[in-house]
Amino acid sequence: PCTVSFSFDSVPQMMLYGRTAFPDASNVSECQDRCVNPSIDLRNRNFVCKSINYDFTEKNYRNYSNARNSRPDLFKKVGKGKRVDYFDMVREEQC
Image (cartoon, one colour):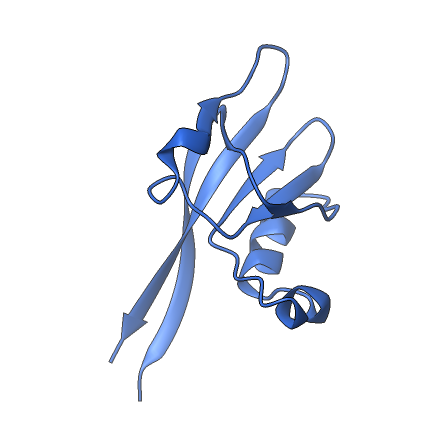
């Protein structure tokens, strides 16, 4: 049988803009876990998380159905005075 694992590649001070969900999360790990294991509400809307932004100041995050490689036009530097990092979800399958 195959096993699937997930990890995240981070890009500091960059942000993806676009369609998103806006849940609160107390830390980056919680945000990443919610991307890998989305709520029933998000699953019911056929939302598949591919990347996240985490705002360290506001302690919230955004899930995205896109990633920086699929929408480079929406991948931009964060403005001064904000601390937001971008994370690509990486899915690894071993059989």
